[in-house]
Structure formats: structure tokens, C-alpha cells
Image (cartoon, rainbow, N blue to C red; front, side, top):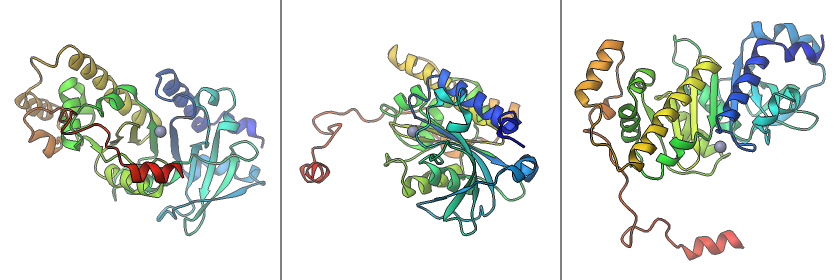
Length: 303
Ligand SMILES: [Zn+2]
């Protein structure tokens, strides 16, 4: 069996389509963004015999509970713009080795490449977002959704506030993500600690925001994760426009949100429902400068 067949598999085809769409949306400039899709034994079984030349790729953070699981993942340094033209260079299939401290590269990533540098965030999130007895969430998706990032500079950064702002920005939002969107402090990407923090948020929310950076979404399939980001990003764009026009003069009320939840049979995030509207962050000024000069830290960084 040759690699041509795997290029034609549903999972590689769908991954090519979604990464191309993400690039066209402007969410994945250069090598920005990464996606992982959990593969089932029935997906990979036809190809197993053809994967004779495999490589080991160590992980910085051992991941628990995923021994033997297979994932289709975007490559480290891969440009989403190039995935469609060269899927075998920019995508790959990995298997988590027993103990979770390394993965085996079964297919793809070119000669020497490997999975995304955000592997700790992806694998920890795959583990954390599964609820016992519920349908498997197979996808973790990260991208630089423009308007949601822009909002992280001006909205008060709590999960309840960001969720409430997006719910009020577009009627569909509460129905599409009743469990809201989680937010954390700014952190260095690619690290184990940002992986842990992301996984902790995705255990409770279908999406998480990395302020000044991007979003993470989960989904049962690629289309669902893409649709979540698309919905949040559309609301984000509306909100950016509304704030740019001087801010809302009327909005969707708490009573309206209650009616929506009732009509569509969803249980909205209590902390966001409890808010009376949403808040902008405190304005920067002499009292609260945007960036504090911390000479010791600057010195350390330049050494
Ligand atoms: Zn990123």
C-alpha cells in the first residue's frame, strides 16, 4: 500500500480542507496554528502494514492516559498555506508510546520534521476534554483568530466576561457555546505549563483564549471545532465594530439570554449569566501603564 492512498483517506482529505480554510480565513499566517485529530483503530488499520520506517520523537512533558493512541497532526513549522500542496511534508501521523514520554512518527512530516511544538497543549487537552461515558472529542484546534485576539486587548480578561461579551454580540453564540470560552493569563507558547493551563480550561469550556495570541477549540470532528472558532470570531468581529462605533447603545439582555437557553434547551455558563453585561478592561494610564519597565528582567533577557 503506498502513501497515495493515505493522501486520499477521509482524515487526510478533511485535515487538508480545514487547514486550507483556516488559512483563507486569515487565522493562520506563516506557521501559525496547529490541529490534531484523534484516529480510531478502524481509520488506521488499512495503512498499518505500510508504515515500516518509523521514527521516535520525544515529548517534553509525558502525557498520561493516551498510550497507543494515534493522531493526525500538523507539523512543527508547517505553513497552513502549503498543506494542500504538500500534505506529506506538513502533516503527519503519530502514535503515543507507552508511558507517554515520546511518540512514534508513523507517516508524514517530511524527512526530518515532527509534530507541532504545541504538542503538550494538544495531548493534555485531548486527555482533559474527555468526559467518561460521553462521545469522544477527537479534535484540538489552535489558530490566530484575528478579532478574538483584538478583543483580548480591551475586554476585562475573565472567562465570564469574555463569554458574556460574545454571547451579546451575536444571538447564535449562547446556543453554539453555552459552556462559554475560557481565558487564562498570557504565557509563553510551546511550554508544558501553557499546555497544562489550556487543558484545565478545555475540561470545562469548548474553547479557550490565549490572550494577545489566539484560540483553542475542541470538537467531536474537524467541522465542529472549525465552526466554534468561526462563530466566536464572527461575534468578535461584530464586537470590534460595535466598540469602534462608540460601544453598544442597546444589546441582548439577560432576560433574552434566558429565553434563548430555554428555547434551545442549553444550560448556559452560570458565571456569565450572573453578570449584568460585560466590561472593558480598566484603561491604561499613568496609574496603570500598559507595560511596566522592569530593568532586571530586561537585562536578564538581553544577557
Ligand atoms: Zn499560535
